[in-house]
Image 1 (cartoon, helix red, strand yellow):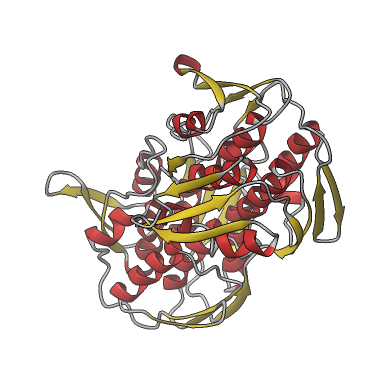
Image 2 (cartoon, helix red, strand yellow):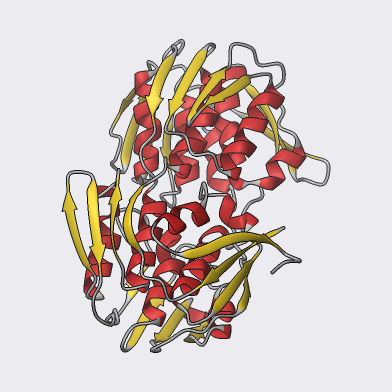
Length: 425
């Protein structure tokens, strides 16, 4: 397992292009099995989670190849509707093949998904929705293998108890080739759900209401070949914004999803960070000590994203006062708190309310810390950039799940950062 070594103290300056979106790529890669032909995905990020999804495609009988950041998928032939247990355990987003394979093959066998250890994420919403669409479910083995089958997907009204992104996407994937009409109430509004709808529409699907809490899908008989360009990654963009703020830098981020990051931009401006927007470029700069933010609550889109909570916590650790974060989505998002404390951060947790109270310090200090999850790992890298001395972030593989090359990108802005082996760290 690799580590990331950071020597702090460098202000981030320069210009950097934002990579393609991880959370848009994963459901769209699953969706390619709905088309009995060729799909071309441009601006596709070369990250571990994408590679895992591609491995699953190839297990199913699809063929894939890369040209730069363009991914070609030939899903003309599906040889099996089963996803291996080993593949599923590696990442949670593999559950998106549930809806996609039901839509294409009317059958799927898949294990209970794995992924980051940021809290309980049951798939009851997914399975309950499938039942309403004429799907029979059974659990095999010790109950951790799911076998679903149907003679035909029949559209229905789906009421989600919570606007789950994955459940919304799975219902859309299952209903695209269904008979009749599916109406999703309390659907997730995240931009990555809209992007899945954009892709499917370009491939011939009939979808209304994308970007709202009510989505309607009218089943079609087949999809057709399509070339599609993925949106930039809003969480990567937000991560690099917070890195610039934490180092009192001055940099321009290009191909930036401005509208999709409005909630993060507003919070960063409260800290005193200056943000200038022009078309799809954003300049971020900060010349004086950051100010605290009274309270941040993570919420489904368009609220403050849970995937930016850890990075913002690092920024607030350096502010001039007390800030509060309330995590409303995942109960285990605070695994990096103990790691930040090793660097001198002052953070108190109130477990009953899943609340973190952060008292800013003037300086963090380099330390050996461990990445427990994708976004928490990125937040520790940011802490290392801002700290005095050297920081080693162990378990960097988790960061590679969502960032093409965080060391390459930050070094391009002047950071003293590199990958190294665990033994060399």
